[in-house]
Image (cartoon, rainbow, N blue to C red; front, side):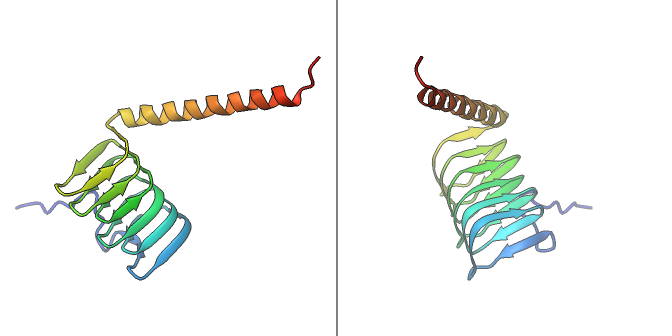
Length: 150
């Protein structure tokens, strides 16, 4: 009679493919194609094509990329979420956030820039263009320095 709909952001135990337990510390680039649950510590970068859940006791020092994410722990680094980001009341995020949809529970803390909605894709494209322009300017300057005067 009533549908029991799952929260689209928090993966269930059966759907989670990777779990980093509270006693585990991971250093380096972490890449997954499935759902990831982090209860321990991660430093480096985290990228998953699916959903990320960060538990209350988790401490992350990494840039994060995921389809959806729920953050309940401490996050130092930028979050780039393709769809929906949820910050629970215990979340502490120190870094820039890009997401289509952002849900913030009372008590959550954030420090950084926010780009929310369809503007998130525009901001990403603008940042890429700016980086390319800076690269081109550096290349021109290097060429000027290396080319002998005539």
